[in-house]
Figure 1 (cartoon, rainbow, N blue to C red):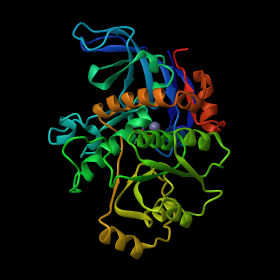
Figure 2: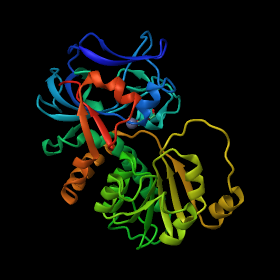
Figure 3: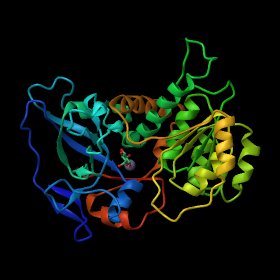
Figure 4: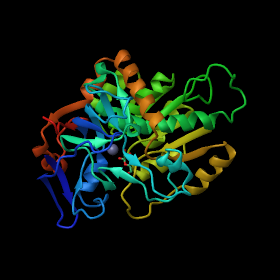
Length: 373
Ligand code: BGC
Ligand code: ZN
């Protein structure tokens, strides 16, 4: 079968022919890949700056944002049946008995660093028509989400982040034990700032709207861009970096209770940190390329962290529960804003176009590959 292979050794990206995978074990599930999203991580891997092939292979099959259909199940699989739609997980646990998180199926908190990741780290990904997966690494998707469920994986990052946020906010003494929408809010009129209006930023912003946050989105795209329009359609207040200086952000928002950083731009992220409000939380999700050190208003930031009970945390990957929550949230987004998810998907392409798509980024928000087409 055909697959997109990244060869770090000879620095090339090629559509190659690889052996098909057949059911060999009674807990195997054979899936047919329908959609694979392309993201910044794929582009970094395609520049040979990140990622690695499986042991013994000179190439890595790319693709970690997947949506697939179950085509065949082993004799001992009762969770899935042919025809089911599924999103496969990215990260596999490390092998070490001492790694508590991996042994509890939370490889997203792996302590050894010896986890593997589909399409990223030492495990082939989804840019091929078929593969074998185990039920524990699949999350079921309702059929009516077929057209957008490829957005599940980027949304799992937000679900994990906001799950953590909710638990952190339980430190505040005034929440009633009953109703606890996640994420919790610092105050009744909580305001969140999302940095970046790409797929990650928009999905995070929609999730915050569902939780009842007044949500601001700050990003490079001009006010007339599709990204800005979709943010506004979800009820967010869009602030273009072309119009607003960073120091105007706080005046406009007044109290920034939560920041969801989704660009990996360290200069902007640390400048925004200075404006975080009382008891505020800032979440880092973007992975910057390692560059030169930048100047930082460290005294102001440190004073605020202490005097305002602030908390900054980073988060990577997600657990199975986060996939289920993300699928649930996608359904909610679809009910509330029927046009947004559809507009986020710029186009669907065959495998042979992937090397070009990775080199030059066409306009639009999320580009999707259809390996099984
Ligand atoms: C993926 C994560 C992964 C991370 C680090 C991201 O693009 O969404 O699942 O853990 O890259 O490799
Ligand atoms: Zn990704």
